[in-house]
Length: 477
Image (cartoon, rainbow, N blue to C red; front, side, top):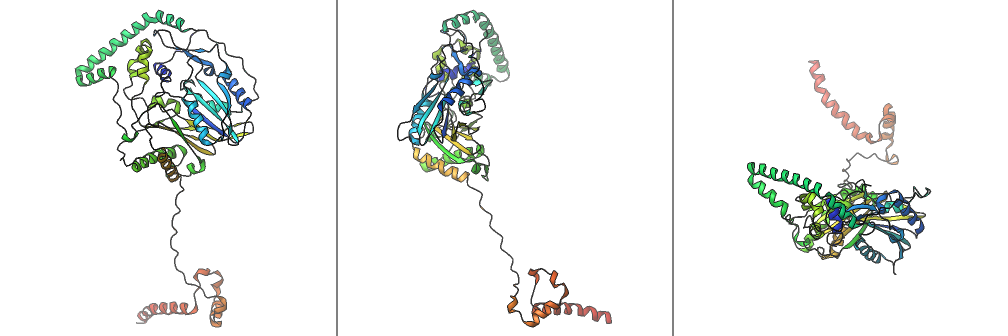
C-alpha cells in the first residue's frame, strides 16, 4: 500500500505546531441563538470522518530522519477524543467565551492523533457555541477542510453512516527502516540535483559573479527580517481575539469599498493607521499580506528566500531539531488578512447568528479574517499582545474604521429651484382678468406654470408690437 508523503512545507507546518510562536492552527467559532441538539453535531462529524479520510488520518514521523513522514489512517481513532461537550462558566458572557476560545485554539495537537478537534459549549448567553480547531495540514486535494461547515451542514442528516475506513498499521521504526532502503536512490537524486545546482551557479558566475555569490549565500543563510512598523515589533507566545459583527447589507452598500472583502481590508488598514497616529508614532511602513484562506497564511507570510524551498530534498534527512529552527518564522509582514464566504448554517432548530474564522498568528503581529454569510460580515482579529500593547486603543480604532468604511454614501445636495411667477388665487383675481383668461381659446391646454396675469401679457404684446413696427415702415417705403 502506497502512503501519502508529507511535503517539506508540510513537515515544517507539522513541527511548527510544537512552538506557539509559529503555530498555524485555524480556528472556527459559531454562536447559536439557542441550545442545540449536540448529538446531531457529533453524528455529523462521525459521518464526515467516514467519508473524508483526512479526518481520520494522522502523520507518522520516522524514528530517525531517513525519509518523509507518512499519512496513515489512525488505528486508534476515537471520536469522543476529538468532539467534546462542556458548559461555559457563569456569567457566560462574550469575555468568558473569548477566553475559552483562545485557550482552545492555543492548545497544540497530539501528534499521535488526527490534527483537529471540536468543542460544543452550553451556556453562551441564551444559546450555545461551537468551537473548532484544525491544522492547516487538514485538507482534501489541497482544499482546507472547514470543520464548521461539517458541523453546520444539514444536507446529509438522513443519509446512512458509511463503513469505518480501514486503519493503517505503521510504526515510526518501520518507517525509518523503509527510509534506509530508499537512501541509495535518494542519494543519487541529491547528487544529480547538487550537480545541477553547482553547474547552474558556475554558469551564473561567468555572466554575473556577484549574483552567483548572493544566490549561494542565500542557500545557507537565513533571510533578512522585514523592517516593518516599530510599534508592532514585539513578538511573544500569547494570543488574544477581538470579534466584530456587522450586517452584510452595510458591506455590500459601502460606496467606496463595496463588498465584504474590500471593506474588510480597507477598515483594517485605516484602523492601524489611526492606531499609529494616536500612539504618537508615525507609520512609515505597514506590510499587509492577503491570503485566499486562513489555512495558507503561514505559507503566504513566508519570506521570498524561503529556507524550506532552498533545502528541498535535503529536508527529510535533517534532524528534527534543525527542522524546528527552520519552522520558526523570521519577521515578515506585520499584518495578515483573509476572507471566507460561508453559509450561516444551523443545528436543528438552533440557528447560527454569528460565524467567525480565527486565523493563526505565525510570527506576525496581527491576523484578521472576515467571514461573509448571507446576513452578516463577521470579523475575527487575532493578535500578539507583545505587538499590540494598547488593546483598548486598537478596539476604538477598529470600531471607528469600520463605521467609516461601512458608512452609506452622503446624499447629494439638491439643486436650487428656479423662481417661477406665482399665479394669483382665483378668489383674488379681478373680474376683467378672469374674463380675459376665459376668452382665450387655448387656455385649457396651457400648463399651469406658464399662466401669467393680464398686465404681464399686455407688456409682452407691446414689446412685440414695438419690434415689428420698423419692419412695416420699411415695407411701405
